[in-house]
Image (cartoon, rainbow over the protein chains, first blue to last red):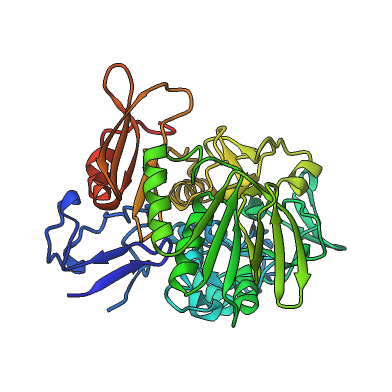
Length: 55
Length: 394
């Protein structure tokens, strides 16, 4: 399981924890998150290089 | 200046879209614009070194042992390539001439097709008596951060001015970094105006558990050099010995050059929902802009503005709308998310929870949620509550 960090605001998406409140079950890999998903803290898009893998 | 392509004989020289500022506002706008328009020449002008970085991460660097180079994500050369843009660094514009659609860098005129002001806000400086005013440092950009880190190297005691969001984030981060923090602010609670008192008490208790000491009420009256460091004195007479002073008392949108050019300014540079100022072809976003009456110095509204303005600059005029804009405060000792109720909507607060886990909700007479403050484990309810919040700019 990896973690992804938003390069704009620093929000961390932890694949192991998921985001159950947004319908992303624990264990949801980054690839399975919809393309139109936005960073919950700052609204940055998932697209392009805007989230970086940190582990 | 950008060079015209030579091949087709009749190709006119295209004047660039010019963005002043390479912070989150300038670079994110450029990025969004390039998704829609890869051809129009783009020029960014920065008073700083033009490195790309995430501003919210400035208040996490001590805890993560990251210096300014560690927080920098890209050099201006790499940004220029990525954005297909020209970038002037260490360059201050000195005037704007809206009538001729050009700006000035000293004696040098720069023509623009559209001009975007994304030059941010200036740290407010409070006057303090004594001989050590210059030891009071703000952190509002990566270069400030580098200066502060250099000043903090080998030191122990930080006097922190301001108990707002940024002051609290730095109190947490500097404590994690091993500094003894004394926080001074002329208010009764942390983050007044943003936060319900119950949630403020939870955050303050969390910071105190890290060793931070609070002096709420007085201001720093004087600061003098001593043999061993600095000696501060608060307005209530309390002496505080420290090694350096971090000022986080707030930011004032930069409006002077805009006002001098005849643009309407209020708290910030006044722009409409399309981010257009009182002059056609001049736009503003980010910390310097007052969008339809709102100057919100946060990342989420900035990103909304960047996307809308990119559309407008690419030929499809688009108004920005803000949904709920909750603010996540980086105080990991006591996580906090807050969405203050709109000023013109009266409501009643209910507070549940205890210790570091506070759930404060503000509802109007009909029971509709207007705002909230969530701390500790209660932050998990954020997304569910966001769905009930009113939009800020519908």
